[in-house]
Picture (cartoon, protein in one colour):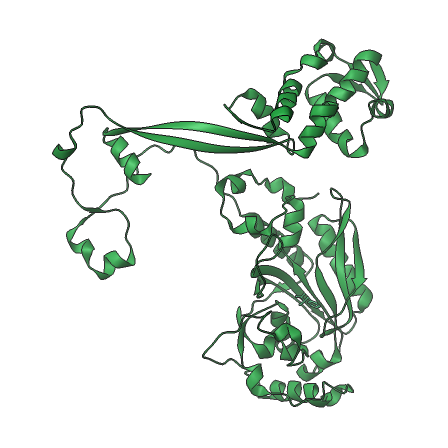
Length: 461
Ligand code: PHE
């Protein structure tokens, strides 16, 4: 592209662009092609009745609850009806529409027969751009480079110019001799887009604000972590399956341990025989060497473990950060993902408060319905998994883990008060809000996708 643009700026060549729009009908689109667009189904009844109550209209046109919002929305947007209290009256525009030849409907029908077409961009497609889920629209730009006539290539003098400064250019000292191409900063920019946050970054900011509003302070911890803080301090036995190479990324050739000897000894005793906790521990010989193996932290709960050492009750802290697991990558899993972690260290809190904190957090994020399922984690008791109800899908979705840290976790830090803890997914709620079904989309840096993401979608209320 750069070479082509350079040629064209020197009038040695011309670039021609051809936009190709590829259309594919979706299941929903096929349904509309067969049974009419839902607003047309309403209009059909309305043309017959002239005035009708909304509930009767929905009933008569056999529009189900899911479609009713879309159908009524487009009916009003097209100005086919006027609302008066509970009744709808047809307008002149509505009367004029001939349902059988209504262009978007005809277009949809044709498309349903062909399934897939390559089209020129026109106003009909624009209509369907505004209504999602009916068509899959993808665009491609074909470019042709046409050499300007009467150019004698062998008469053009070229000079070696460096267009990109690479490490090789620096090491080989090529830059000393060759000319470095200047940026043309006065060139016109075709179309500019306002900057915006990546959706994950956007939600991170939002989550951060919510916890700060709820009186929490933010803490951070290292991404390269010792097994000690990632596992041992959380009373995860040294032969626990989560520590397996298949689940955890270990780093070679160096060691990382617990910097605090007293805490290390306490953790060791607790693992071996329960120490002062009254528990029997795991009943094995705890290995300091194994606690020194560095890992890419598998959860942000490692940061909470570190916080137990730093904070005395009452304390409320949270962290948002990257975590890593040795997963095979698919539409649901990545090797790197983000968690939102928090703890409340306070003599006066209990299990009910834990559920309350989580409910309040999700409420502020926009999820009205939250429920909890019993769960198991080696470091908490009782343990629950919060689930939110996602209206659009009509489903309950699990979003993370939580519980009250076990005495075996808090006692080695000299704490004997309840510590509420949770670790929640950051990606999952964003995927729900944006109706994404592939987690890889986040990291593809697909500009079209990024531009199309509407921040308003990330504000559920
Ligand atoms: N660390 C757990 C996970 O990654 C979540 C969790 C955090 C559970 C804190 C309980 C307490 O799934």
